[in-house]
Image (tube, rainbow, N blue to C red; front, side, top):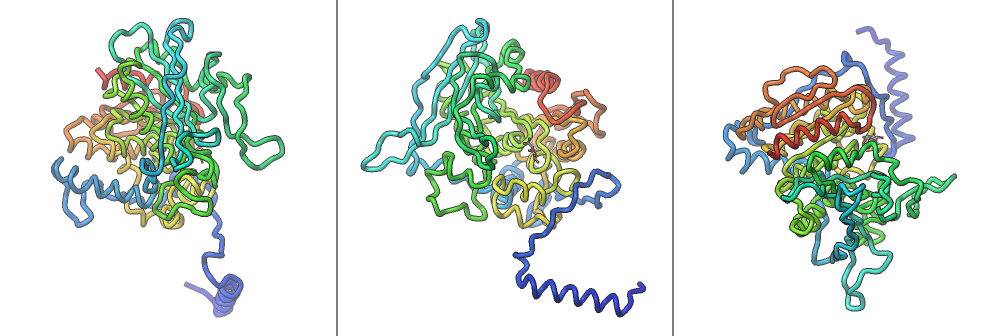
Length: 451
Ligand code: GTR
């Protein structure tokens, strides 16, 4: 190498100047490199082996997986990525389910029965044994098909913009959403608007889902915790953390909190009321799009009572492999959304190869329960190939546990083909979204596995 003395001296001088200006490395805000979309620039990716224990044992039986490797991985994902849930702490937090407050047996033109109920959270003290208006609440919206007599399976997922946005149904209660007023940078609680009814209905084809004999259960994710840095002070966790307290490095970020909300709804709303709702609690699919797809995967991994999990365009921190660093990266996501994951996850910003896991192992944590990963061709930010590879590399765990895994698929399929077995996958044309095609695949997958 031909490096002149002058160049070396200049480099040393530059470094010394930097050290003097920025005496500790923490104060140097490292810049997130631009996103890479070039396959040839992806460094050689060596994935951690799901079927190898920390102490080097080969996992060759379901028993070793269940007793040792799965708990080991679950612990790593919990402490290093999503964070330990501080909820539910029933000693601190009391929850009241307002009776099945609103029902309409003739919703959606008679196709469905609609139920709406409100979960209210509050701290009990000597002076207070009732929630007040400022206490957190989560409104849950449920539709069940009218033409099925026996208990039906259900799709449970959070929505981005409020329950009233999933359908134009005028009976949906207008709640409160988090929005930025014109010219403001801050989110404030804002009464949901009549004109926003149904604005997200293309992502929630209710009639199509109901016609196939499934119920739909949803709630607004911002009710559980609003989605901005500092949102912890305004959701359910405001009852757990005091004003000047923030989560420790291994404590839950927003995604783990939303996932907690999904499990809570599954348990206290659906399972507890399964007779009156006519929903089969053993056939509940958890699903989500994008950041809520990441949430669905974590809910599926942590709550074995979710019988099936669907991730739509979940990307970085969801189904996409972190080590590929294609599109959105760990560094970028932790910088743009510092509240989504736990503090420890930021340790890996500039060295994803030191992560003690990769996202194929998140999918493996769901095994042997069916999991479906959906990608969109133009959604390069979410790295469709990385999403497929995660599904593919979870296959050995699914097969060890006696399922057909990805059913022999070895290559990423052409667009618009749904492939796989217990692990399902498709790549559709188009952008980052949830479309009718996605739902057709989810419904077929669920119908096959919930037979
Ligand atoms: C993007 C984010 C992604 C994805 C998406 C979404 O801005 O970078 O990780 O989750 O938002 O949730 O729509």
